[in-house]
Amino acid sequence: MRIDAISIFTEYFNALDLSLLGKARENHILDFNAHNLRDYTHDKHHTVDDSPYGGGAGMLMKPEPWGEALDAILPADGSATVIFTSPAGEVFKQATAHEFAAKEHLVFACGRYEGIDQRVVDYAATKAEVRLVSIGDYVLNGGEVAAIAMIEAIARLVPGVIGNAESLIEESHSNGLLEYPSYTKPATWRGLDVPAVLLSGNHAAIAAWRQEQQLERTKRVRPDLLSD
Image (cartoon, rainbow, N blue to C red; front, top):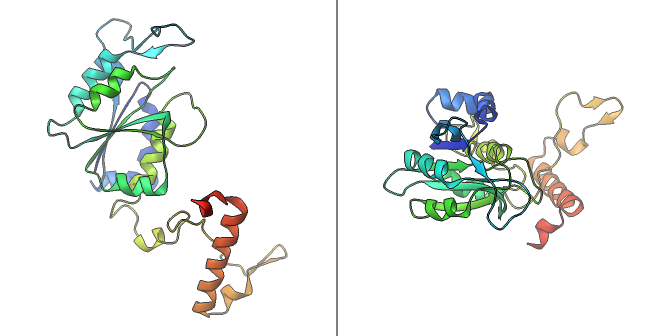
């Protein structure tokens, strides 16, 4: 899978060199590149923003550097998917991660300030599939943190990134429920015991307990998942 990110703060993406994603890049399972939007400007100040038409607080990212960046990065065959990180977008979920993990080429467009000129989104849609995606009902200073969260959620679903693929099956949201609580050695720690059923060796009873715990935790913490 190829993943590109366009940003004015490419240093954020150094985090993707760590842990399993870093190994996946070393093993050429993932091809990731971060592109500095300022490299596509032509004035001495590398300006990427200006005041919005119609007035309003803050600055808006200009279309010219975005257009040049997209022209340089997007393939001519329209096979890429451009993801604009935006609080005005659809909410990113585990199902979204699975959908994007099946794509060949993702391009994350990370806005700043008050966002990106709408014409950039419209232009990108003439060259690729376009999605506006949010990681939650709140606003960040820029799209980089959201992009990193999505990239990690997506990339770990790509075959070969996670060593034990079976570990993905019982995670939170994999079946619409939150994950059950987990325990390891020692069996007793600071007066707190591991549930006896997990020490019983009865796999059917353990499976039933885990399912019960998933339902209980989901009802208590995220009842909205049960009403979807």
